[in-house]
Image 1 (cartoon, rainbow, N blue to C red):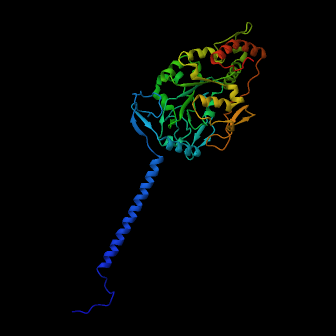
Image 2 (image 1 turned 90 degrees about the vertical axis):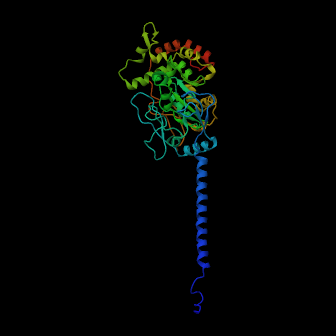
Image 3 (image 1 turned 60 degrees about the vertical axis):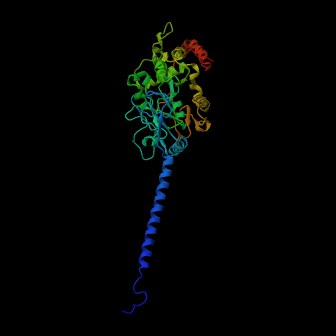
Amino acid sequence: MAPPGPAGAHPTPAEPLSRSIFRKFLLMLCSLLTSLYVFYCLAERCQTLAGPVVRPSGGGEEAGAPGRGALAGGPRELAVWPAAAQRKRLLQRQQRRRRRPPAPRDDGQEAAWEEEPPGLAGGPGGSGAGSSAAEAPPGTLALLLDEGSKQLPQAIIIGVKKGGTRALLEFLRVHPDVRAVGAEPHFFDRSYDKGLAWYRDLMPRTLDGQITMEKTPSYFVTREAPARISAMSKDTKLIVVVRDPVTRAISDYTQTLSKRPDIPTFESLTFKNRTTGLIDTSWSAIQIGIYAKHLEHWLRHFPIGQMLFVSGERLISDPAGELGRVQDFLGLKRIITDKHFYFNKTKGFPCLKKAEGSSKPHCLGKTKGRTHPEIDREVVRLLREFYRPFNLKFYQMTGQDFGWDG
């Protein structure tokens, strides 16, 4: 029998076994910790990036019908978004947004303020691919992630041209619960044959609790518009921005003159016969200001309580006060207040101290606040006499005295 070797020269069978068990234990521990970390990350992501929960609708809603949370493509499904998580994401995105001034336009349309998220210049807008109303309003990142849904508008600014509709829309877009198309869709007057699905695709995506809006001032004077909007939804809220019809007509002429310097004088366009003082009501600049006549068409389809009449003059002198009325009418919390405005003496109207997502003040473009040409006082006097009975009737119909004849 061979003598035993030196102590410790050969490991006992128990030593490699214990090391093997220890290595397996470490691997299992690492695997467990990794799994827990992955599970934690997934849970956290699911909390803030929750997808839509699909459930059957109760009313067999038609495609294109307005309704909160309805998916753009389906009549039988509603997307129910976790309100708290979506609101949190909306606020986070608004902090990352920045705005840039509008590019000049050559088609005569009012240029919209444009918005874009950092690092996404030139990316897709929020109003539908290829639409003339393309924009990137609040929550642009949500649009790029294909979140929310496109809704038909619950509220429309229907008029009037040169009354202050652009200012009202841009002021309203400061509100986190308002999502609006920047450019004018002109659906109910020019593109109705394209259908509601086309119209809805122009709208920005909205999250739960947000209002979809658009503004097209020519709707107010379009005979077919009231019936068409009523056919879309009888619950649509309508906003009309009105202004002294004489001042409005001069402003309208001034805009046309800036594009066509060779047009006849304001005086020659105003009268059919200057000698008799007969006003030419076929001229659109005059015809638009006969507010009572146009309102009669709307009241055949909508109750007066479903319409809000905003004073263009007070929108300049007291923007926060008028915005307060508008926010109440739309059922919104009064977020837009005096602190949002300052008066620009050069332009002659209020501007935003700090647009949403920007650290700089913002005013409407240079096409706003044009200097009006000098109009003969006698022409102005005759126009005021012409409009006075129509104004008084309009005051009675709306229950508001706008003070144009004081």
